[in-house]
Image (tube, rainbow, N blue to C red; front, top):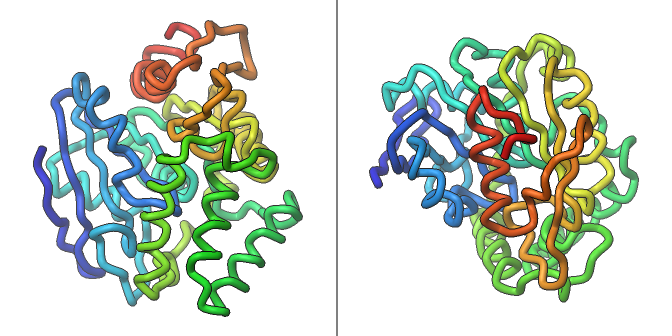
Length: 298
């Protein structure tokens, strides 16, 4: 494994590289940092050059106090590593970054995989009032200086999901996420405060994305995230959507104690290739990272 920093005019970006083969860039969720991919790096690096990085303000990448474009940071990372083209596998916040990259840097993208993705220009609150209410609670906790309360809320929202109990999820997964989320709060910064969006917004250019695309969402995720998955799958030409049952916002972190977590797609009947953590990884590697392999062939 090699690691280092990309020097940019907005500040450094921390990254790690493992393995050999076609390049794959892993983007982390907004409740985490690059460590969220610890369980996947080993299997992926047997077949790919796996690049993971901390978005500015997360993990080891310093907060940027000036405007910066998250999708351009990926391009800068690829330039630094001498990688012409890569596939992106991105979760939640980084899903929106990856979609922006697919529009702004289409010539550098082999394949796109988004999981529980956000989407710039999508009205979260109109689509999901329940999610808006939870977001407002987070603000109340932080205003009161109650980091413990805010961390617990984030874990319940994004790991347990809106319809499950903490007992339904592996306790070690919840603790792992809590540690990363706490570090974000304790930094005292809003990491994305100065992040800029693509202009015009990517949501207006989804039909222009030409890379093979896989959209993954858990059926226990918030309604807004499931709606975004529908938007992406219906408007990106040729995109395939996979729903992983009995899992919430981050399928690879499902950690269910009593459920297998099987899969379905929006377009065809497929094998039950999400019945175990190992086979869930295959959804986001064999099926997702090779443009010539569909999810149904896993």
